[in-house]
Image (cartoon, rainbow, N blue to C red; front, side, top):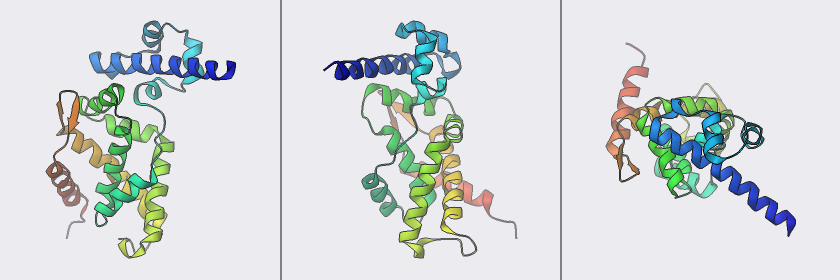
Length: 204
């Protein structure tokens, strides 16, 4: 009983700090958030904050993503010919995961502040490596879908995820926030993908 109560208190404290960080970022912008302001809003000490989070960014944007196999399989089956789009959608849907107000505000931050997608993705080594593993495993299971003939699936997955991060940033720039929900037109993906392909193609 005591252990269960302690765990409930820990979850409540973590949630209070996350809510404070996200609310400050949503209302005033990511740069306005400081550990001191989060602690004041959540009524905790600085040492308590760092008992729960390794960085301010983790409190604002959440822990490293875990990718649900059913979700990733469904998305990869939908975009088998463009794993860059698939990887980008996997990240967005994984972030969307918990359908609550804090998640909606986190998603809105990516739309409100262009460049945030890349900054968060490259800062979260664990999220990135997990996604690379997902894509590499899918290529292992579907080798006929691989694009590279001179490299292994891990290399292709790593490059795919790097492109997907850039794609996510471009797509978020054209996303719309409607009643707190982030809306992305599928054509936005296609247009951004065409621009990326044009730039990455070698000159004749």
